[in-house]
Length: 195
Image (tube, rainbow, N blue to C red; front, side, top):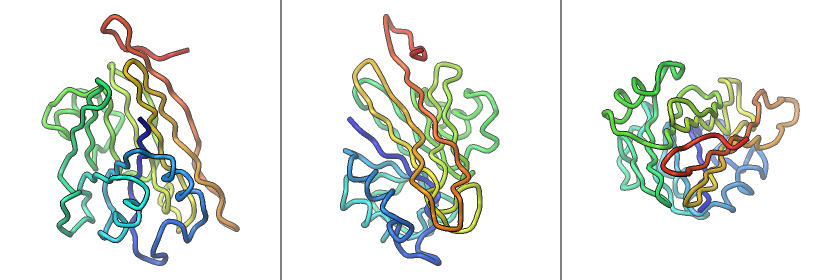
């Protein structure tokens, strides 16, 4: 199963849809079975645009002042035997995973923790949890509108491959982000990074 991860789209604003910055977002979302948005969508029209590619679920961000059946304070999913939890804000993200889980997911244990809010991409495995912040596809590192990042989770029963994906370059506005890949596997009840 392939999941596309987005956060902090903050649309509509100077632009109305993600594809106004280039084809990168559309090409990435077209490969997804499910889209998870970690908040600060700002308008349901963004979700409608995304849903043309795959079903969408959203963790409500501080700028999401609207009601929508796809939107919840946090999202919890069980996929291929892995437990995923998504919330919007977990600053500072460098705190212990146990603290992040307590604050963001009411202490629920997960295998994959997804958050947004910072506009800075993050991909790491610590304290037996894969932690992903997909960054922002439109306002990376809080710069003006330009292509940034999204993330992909390729989930199998005993393996997850996670990638922070650079969506391309915007003319005259370089993408400040860094792509990365991390793969974890479960064997005999233990999860570890695949070398």
